[in-house]
Amino acid sequence: PDAQNAIADYPAATLKTSEHSEAAAAFVEWLSGAEAQKILRAAGFQQP
Image 1 (cartoon, rainbow, N blue to C red):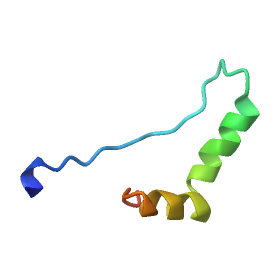
Image 2 (image 1 turned 45 degrees about the vertical axis):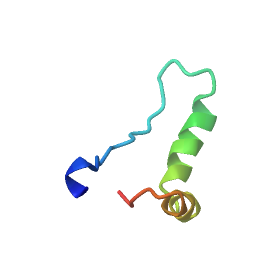
Image 3 (image 1 turned 90 degrees about the vertical axis):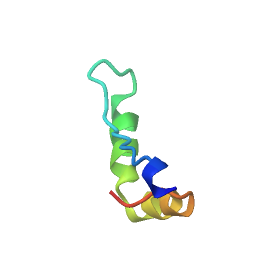
């Protein structure tokens, strides 16, 4: 039932102490791009 459906947020961010901060920042940026959004929608995620 609709009343039992949960809408979840999945935030993405880089960590200040990351050993791979450039790769992490690139991935977070990629997540908001058209390719990633298409993949996520195909997997059942809604557009933010």
